[in-house]
Length: 151
Ligand SMILES: CC(C)(COP(=O)(O)OP(=O)(O)OC[C@H]1O[C@@H](n2cnc3c(N)ncnc32)[C@H](O)[C@@H]1OP(=O)(O)O)[C@@H](O)C(=O)NCCC(=O)NCCS
Image (cartoon, rainbow, N blue to C red; front, side, top):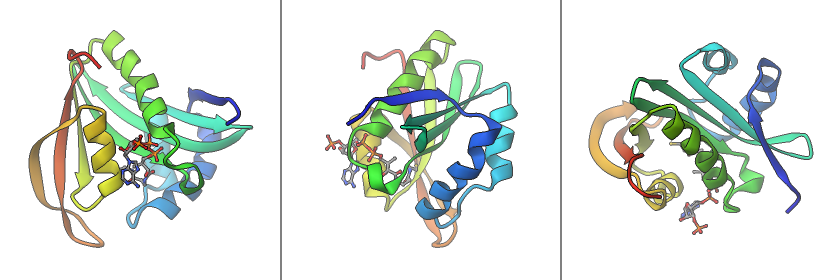
């Protein structure tokens, strides 16, 4: 594959991102949701680009030694090629350098691809949130990664 570039998300990226977002989720984030992350001083927002085309993005919010992975999505045409893993690892190093210890996320219990990926990235299930998701209504698994552990 040609070189994939990872860079900071900018407001100008948000329109293209929401096209991928709408194709990926039954309850997609709006442009406003992405813009509020881009402008938040607590957020890390990055995209992966291939030949100037956005193919993946990640949003993480960090407060003190805790962070929350809010969104990690890959364009369906580019999945299963290690792109989410690469983008996640890119941000993980910065979280560690920023003094973050614990990274949390919620994921649909039925989202096999995401569950397997987070398991492979050493997240472990630490709880469930009943009926957390709508359309369809479903429990969330809460997962946590201890960034002080070796990866
Ligand atoms: C989940 C998602 C981000 C994975 O992105 P990706 O770039 O395809 O993931 P990777 O190629 O880095 O895969 C890493 C590992 O995850 C697991 N995995 C990924 N997709 C999988 C699938 N469809 N079925 C089973 N395991 C899967 C595998 O263990 C894989 O490693 P392997 O290919 O060496 O076996 C992508 O499927 C996606 O964008 N889905 C829609 C949005 C979403 O659900 N995001 C997560 C919300 S919490």
